[in-house]
Length: 494
Image (tube, rainbow, N blue to C red):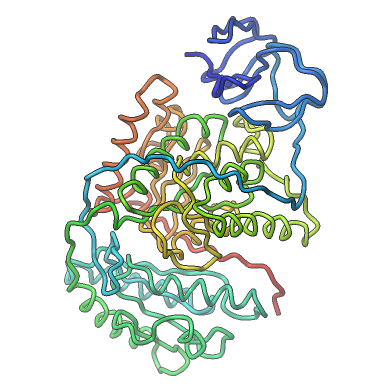
């Protein structure tokens, strides 16, 4: 198959391979002779389009023609403009809840005292401030060297970051809430909080943002001890011994929490990997589990579709606030809401933010929206949740981890080695990326869907892969020791 028309209403097709000018592309809508070279993931016109006419993809407008576009010509940034604007009013046109599939697959996880199930049993070393990042990393390295004596502790991670001091107001509160949320994560069998002593977010302050009575947590204030590494090592040994008592047990999918993310998207993201993730999200939600979608700016242009799937009027109103507040965030900084896609997105075939968003929301499948979370808020409701966070890979993945997902499904068309503190499974949108980076950056290839593979079979294969990772199989990024914490900063630095 040379190209695909995603929806019968569409006036463009997407090339599934590089196509030369003069090629006759046969489609259900009829043959099209290409008037220009069309790169994989890019679009061409199925009919003549007039200037100002809506360009339809996924069955919805992705923008408007800047000029007349003839049949067979490339449709992209040179001849399409966005239709997005600022805050707006929305109407709740609820669609009937979809009947979701389910699965009886299980995984081997760690049930914590609060009933939440983790998929890793790790020691997390959490600095309150950047000043002690290197101390935290040295203690994580020491802990790694001791894992042989504690066979049920799987890894030790230093969750380093550049904040924790010289912040003010809500910006400072955000950092504290984020660190507090990470300290509660179920993938951590034990947590060592490392402070300096004089920082704004010192240990005394941070105790109000975490559960200081949690037996998994210990504290090290570096200015209070003569040798912070020796004192820290003693606490590390104590925490390793505590975490080593945990054991895996068989858990149903209803206990699994997955995050949904895309980064380095291309023109195939909304055709292969994102719909595949959406099928898996439906399987998890249909089994009583939880999935979380974020990247709010990459809902702009597709937000009404999500709003109409809100479980009730209250969830609808929270979704409206989520969208309009984020548009207000852009405008408060003098930025337009359509300042997206990235250069890499455009090179991959994504033309406007509407184009990107309509492909992005495919990750949410068909489930109704059951919950809306603020940044740093922990999960409470099974089913599909929306989370306040930007599109930035580091910030949004860290936000998903703080919300309490066990792992993240991360689709990518351009490729990225990035991973956050929970297992981050990279799913390629095209087979060329898999052939280049499979086993190095990429865990699963959705590109086969553009080559005729059955979507339901691939969804089952991906779900089995997820259950294997949830049961202890390491993701590619874990094997390479990649993990990052990126905190959303929006305020004055003193």
